[in-house]
Length: 423
Image (cartoon, rainbow, N blue to C red; front, side, top):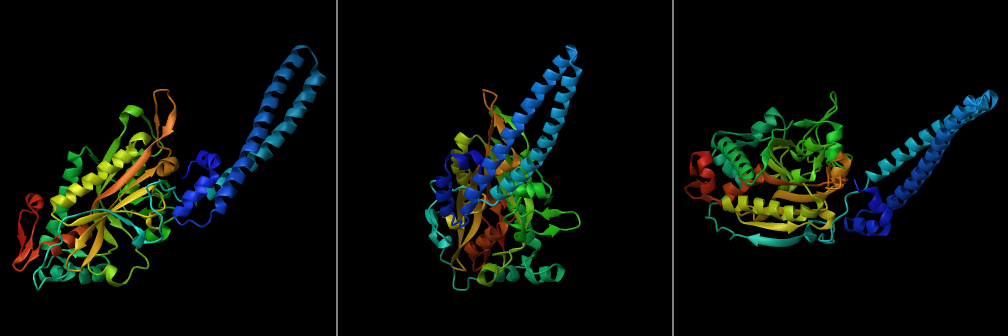
């Protein structure tokens, strides 16, 4: 949630930045300011009434001491009138505050100055590309065919058990999943992240805190009887670990990593994007999260990107890094880098990771602050990244490392799989 003082100070700049995200309801900025002025005016009236009530209370005490009972009773009658006025104003204040809040939560985060203008993924900027595209043998196949050939995962069985988009991993396919999870977690721990195992369902407050609500209700599975959401990413429960916390400045950064299954409805997905493991409703992912000092968050974003790069290099996969344009960014992000692996058999790039700085957007919703040397409380910055999501990484490994005699496992992963080739 955008801090209200930013809107107060520079409403036109806020509108300009929102337009970079192609946000069209710019009138909300003016409505927020109007509600804010009303709220502050009511607050001043309330403060004046309370000040008057305190002054009258002192006068009543003096009058009673002086034996002026009738005058004291008249003053008491005046306080009754003030209390009635105060109650009316208190109700108006609550209504105005709620209206302002309801308007504020409709605004996406402001993009930072590095975000390019654009409307779709076609407008993203390729910041870096690493690795040669492998030349495959004549009989090379996409990963969904390799999954059948080597009995690694079964999409049809998942349909039988649950529905489309819920794959069943088998044999060495299941071992490869487990190996990747352990590999990613070990690398995160080596990088100084503290491993946590979060719940796989969250309440409404947690979903609101990280910006999934009210923006992404349609993408989350909802357990209606318990009013709980299945997590779309471990970012949601992990970031909410620090909700309503105040840290000492020296405690920053807070670094956490977690493995979890992730659940996404992916409504409206169709065509080649959903073939095989390209887009599924349940998948495994290791997430890294940092709560950082505002002055260091963009340096931290770079280090998190470098961490993801090191994973892709260890897996010997060709990749590229995209700086997302305003129109392709998430509701909550101030700056996002996407990592894509080249799918040689499909001849297309597949997104495997997204690393974002949210600045104070999430921490303002969750009230995550630090106390500086002057004992002043200041909002932290929050960041997160996929390190990494498994389905398309598996697709990349199967497709890019396939040979005529089998699928070769990257050396860094072999201690985790216990085998160097799938035959």
